[in-house]
Length: 271
Image (cartoon, rainbow, N blue to C red; front, side, top):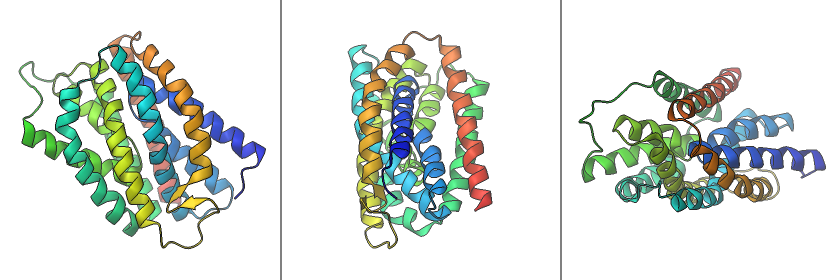
């Protein structure tokens, strides 16, 4: 699988789009990159199992770069809740390591695709319905945040996403403003991406049949193209996020997740 001009164009377009969406919605871009990378690699002859796993791993690796660009833009506007980042990060690191270095290698790619689709569909419904939490509900204490971080890190490691599809609804349900939840999710994307990428490299080190330029399950040529383009548009998405009304931002988030859920479910059941 070589980087011919058409493939470079596809990956660059994906990077520009997902960078913008990462800044806008705090989803790290992996929720978009995973499905589209699966499509791109499948079209070039990769097996369903390998296409899904490499797409998930490569999309997660791009979040390392996208999250830095996105969170800088949000931080300048004072939107990041660093107290929540500190509370969730320890659990995220542990949960991500367990998922990416262990469970990920055991599960079939088609099973991961079905799991991805179901969970994202659930998250989309929660966001679309916009259920109002009790006014007295606040973020849990240290133990609760570590536990929640563990779940976020583990599920993110299985589907190659920055955790925004879980962390944003979780924070909103605990009366964190949507713009603060999106910004904080962008900040959480970095530790999620870092620990899971290391895990994908380790778990894929002994796998045979990987395309040239692979480091474990991470396909480096795609990583370079997507990451380079995504860091350009992530700050733009962050600026737009601060200008869109809360209700509209939630609806955009929900519809994006529904579309991704449908595609990955169809991919999983076809496999």
